[in-house]
Every structure is written in structure tokens, then in C-alpha cells.
Figure 1 (spheres, helix red, strand yellow):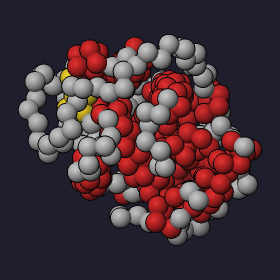
Figure 2: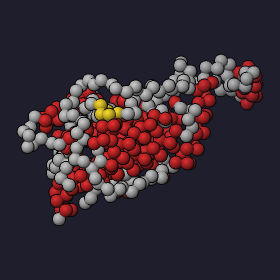
Figure 3: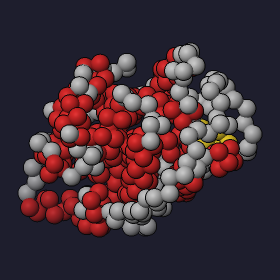
Figure 4: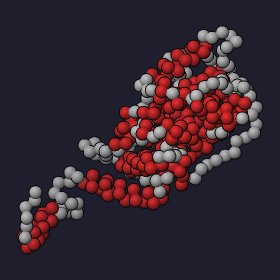
Length: 378
């Protein structure tokens, strides 16, 4: 019966409707003898005292960078095989203690556009210059395209604020609890993620069935990833920045949230610090997000050729970018994939927690969040 009802829900899914998928948003010939003579003369004149090829060293850095790129690519491809599946899954069993309060009372229902900082911000990243300013490394085409497809953060924030204000304007008996409002916030963020996915290269070429399989596999991971990157930009270890722009002190969460939710939030903060230590920039962020979207084993998809092509191109783009722009961090590509595995583990724990809250009637029904929760259990 549960399978039938979930199936019916998917048939009526917003994912299947156009509304959710609409984005608001010539060298001369030489004889052998002549060729030998010219070659000897040219090489004699061209080789410098420091053994660098050519007369002027205009392309020296580029030559060395390309050579290093090829060598590191070969090594990393052998080590990682361009498959996220090869990264060890760091899975922790979800605790069975669900003694969570129904709301975090210290999180107010107002959502101001501006807030006053109460903590010192984490110092900004200092990226060492790894190439001459006159010849920066190229950015892979895939990453450039993904940057263009990134949602407008101000528009997403305004839409979510409007939705929450409508909820707050309802009668007292219809108003959501604070936890319910947080779920509504996550639900609206999920809508924006689906819209982004629908605009993505490769993904938009898939049939709706394959699109749904990919989203059902990674929706919670994308939500957690979105939250973590927002905290990275926020740069404050002792507070959390919501998608609405509101800042919530970690001490308030610790005081009002139950043990499981508090543990999940603290684990997310640990992943933020790890991401900070890896010096992840926006180019890597969009590529990692795309890798999450296509993280499902292609054997479960109808168009597995296209999905595999997307995975390989994204891995290659991320590898090329990290090797070229961070040559001092030869292991960065592998570290990023390992970090994604930790995000995956946290997202699965968050799913279990949310599903339990749903069963206890604390999560608003009839929304995309609930639909995704049920989809994995059918």
C-alpha cells in the first residue's frame, strides 16, 4: 500500500510538471642534408645556458605547467579511475536516540535582510600566486559553463523569504512551528536546486525518468552541500547563516536542539572547516555540485552513456583545474573526492533524522521534501 501511494505521489510530482522545471531564471620543403644542417644550426642558437628550450622564455612556464599537468593527470587517473564509486564511503550508523525538541525557540520568525555580526569573521583565504600574472592557467570549458548556470542568490533568497512570510501571515492554528518553518525553507531551497539541475548541461538532455532518478539519489546531498558552502562564505565558526540571510548562534542551537540535530549541525561545521583548509574556490564548488548531481551509478539509468560521459568530463575538468591552479597541492583532487564522501554520509544521516520527524508529524506534508523522502523508500 505504501509503495502504491508513493507511486501515485510521484505521478503527481512537481518534478513531473513544467512549472518546477521552468527556470525563473607552410613550411618549405627541405632535402635531408639541408634539413640536418638547418636543424643543427637552429638548435645551437636556440638552446640557452639554462637548457630551457627556445631563445626567449615566453612559454617556459606554460611548457612546465603542461608537462606537470600531464604527469599528474596520469597518476591521478590511475589512482582514482575517474569514478566517485572508488572513493571509500565514510558511513556512520544513525543513532536511534530521537529525543529532539520540536523547535528551536531561539530562531525567530522574522527574516531581516541585514543582521549585526557578533563574532569575528574567519580570515579570508590567501591563495598563493602559482603562475605569472601575464599567463594565468585556462579554466576548463565545463566549469565556465557551470558558473554561468549558477542561480542568482538574491533572487533565491527573495523567493524563499516571500514564501515564509506567507506562512507567517496565516492564522494561529495554521502557522508552522519553528522546525516546520525550517523544513519549509529546505523545501524551497530544494525547488531552486531542481531548477538549477534542469538547466544543467547533460542533465537537460536526459529523459524525465533518468532526471528523477538522479535527483532522488542526491537531493539531500545537494541540500547539505549548499548549506556547507554558504557557511564557508559566511566565514564564522560560531554561527550559522540561513539561506534567508539570518544568522543563528551555535550556542542557541546547542541549547534548544536535541542531541541528534545538534550533532548533525556540528558535523556540518567540521566539514566547513575541512573545506576551508582545502582552499576550495567557486570554480571547484560548481564542479563538485555537478559531480554530486551525477553521482548515481550509471547502471541504474536508461541513458547510461550520457551520464557516464558527464561524470568523466566533470572529473577531468576538476582534475585539470586543481592541477593547474593549485600545483602546490598535488593531492587536492583526491582530497575533494574524499570530502564528497563525507558529505554523502552526513546527508544520509540527515535524511533518516528528517524521516523520523516526518513520521512523528513534525514535518509539513504535501511538499517536495516529503516526496523525495518517500521516493527512496519505495
